[in-house]
Length: 303
Image 1 (cartoon, rainbow, N blue to C red):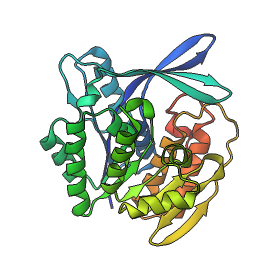
Image 2: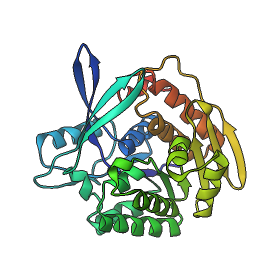
Image 3: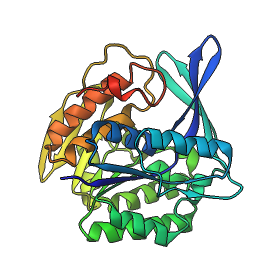
Image 4: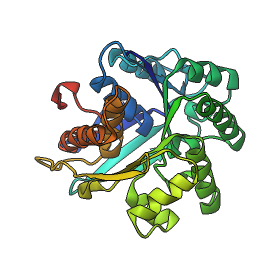
């Protein structure tokens, strides 16, 4: 059956390495990357929409044109007068990336300021996806607005997926960060954490501890990503393991987790088992890390 997936977060201007000291301009951001890969992997009868805020400048217009060309719906995006998108630069060393950001005044920080707008789009959607980065860029009152609408959707039986995607630089302090991440999980039906983040910031000593902690917060399904060591899933009281797919070459790990999430959700929402969905997500990620930048051509993705 066709449906609608709504991804909520920030899309930024991306500058990535193009060789010989040159930079390539693109558009990316964790929740947008997931929307991109979900759109590429879902059939045409599924709608994939992105909810954010952008400015009224030419770069924002170019970003919206880019999204539309990829088949991602932009009607949920509010335009804020006088604002611009955020920007980040990827620096690579041995395939691993570091980021430099310019986003303090980005329009996306206002994406949840209009509660009625949020509610309307969440109510129209079957699956809602957001991340810890979504939360990290918002003012406290905007976080409260978003959580209120997500909790309403969860109570109505909608499927809500959350990637904690923990980035300390976005937060005023560790305690606020961890509490907000936990509140995000409480508003979700499914969480897709990365084990290295959970071990570093929550102090989890095992994947089993991560799974138990999120279930204790009321999460129905937990998908713990562990890089080359595969994915551990816990759904319906059953734990299972899906191995990683070895990449033919490692060029750029940007968007490895985001592309996994997009591939995983694209299969799960159409009725695949969590294990089969995770196997497909792993296959998508193995292709993505073999290319530069967050987004690669859909033609390169596994069928």
